Image (cartoon, rainbow, N blue to C red):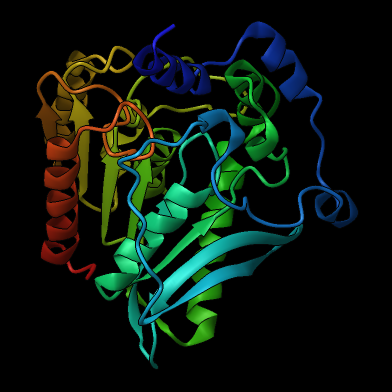
Amino acid sequence: MTDALADTRADTLADTATASDLRALTTTGPVSRRTLMAGATGLTAGFALSVQPVGAQTITTPTDGLEAGEVRIPTSSGDVPAYRAMPQGAGPFPLVLVVQEIFGVHEHIKDVCRRFAKLGHMAIATELYYRQGDVSKITDISAISRDVVSKVPDAQVMSDLDATVAYAKGTGKADVSKLAINGFCWGGRIVWLYAAHSPDLKAGVAWYGRIVGDKTAMNPANPIDLAGQLHAPVLGLYGGADTGIPVATLDQMKAACQAAGKTCEFQVYPDTPHAFHADYRPSYREGPAKDGWARATAWLKSHGAA
């Protein structure tokens, strides 16, 4: 299997639940604080094992002029780890939620937070799989999907993102009136869902997040089902050669948004694969990645989230 094919397979698996997964999901009960705190104690150091070796083109954003590091987000079932980066100083800074790929909050996602911080944001990436398991130590892509990702309820994710906003507001350094969300792959789908969930959101950017797919007990709705409920404009950045996300589904979402009077725009890069922004992986495409980043930051600024 080529590296590029492995990348596509990884992200496709993350968005697919089998019948056995569904049976496991229905037996998942509430998580106690003791159970929560008995799991992983913090964020991944470096890169997840499943994405090794890291590519030579990997971007590293320095922390000079920033306040950056791990924080804990209080939730109703205990604290959840997150990575926060923001400029040094009193603020307040526009808040952007950075949502992980299937590989968790590893070094690439932290670096994206620092990139946003360099532009004047408080950027927070919360470890949204924390209750279900630590994907950073799993090398088998199928196991990540089957044993962890498929057991993460959308409702839990929405609640944790709300808790992250509340945490940021409580620090006194975040301007939550300029709330944005930016997510990749698995996180790209979450951007669409959160835009339909939060009335406080000003703008979202979804990088190659699926629009349609199988529904499960944990994932009861797809973005296409929620087009009419969007509270904020969403920019979708997609690859024309993404074998897991047909361009036709993007057209469906665009039509659904237009019919509902909602704002969503799409930029599709021809001959570009899934995960083209992931500079640490073979799927990285410098041209689309840089253009997408420029479009993303301009989108936030034009919609009052910067």
